[in-house]
Length: 95
Image (cartoon, rainbow, N blue to C red; front, side, top):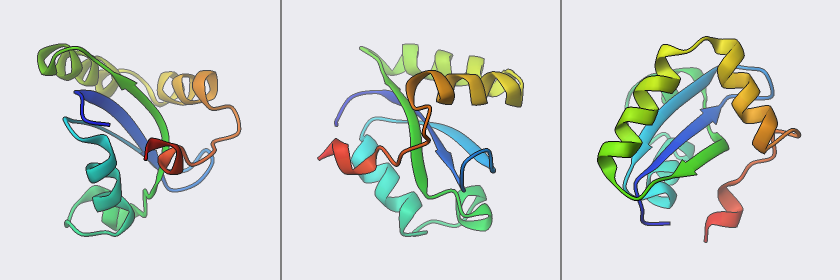
């Protein structure tokens, strides 16, 4: 999926969550899953794509990412639960 996209990765159901923005969701999630880059997701094992939202422009995606990151953990979990109540790994469906 090559489009500006906001996404959330998780270590497990109700575990540590990480939100980000990318222009190539499949590539970026692969990097998280394989721990190819140092940082938060590698340190905390956030390897499961549990939520994402595509946008028409990167400006819109960045604005949404900022909104999500400024919100509470409870709101992030509610986003995930609304789209993906079973916390299924959404990565296989991207290809």
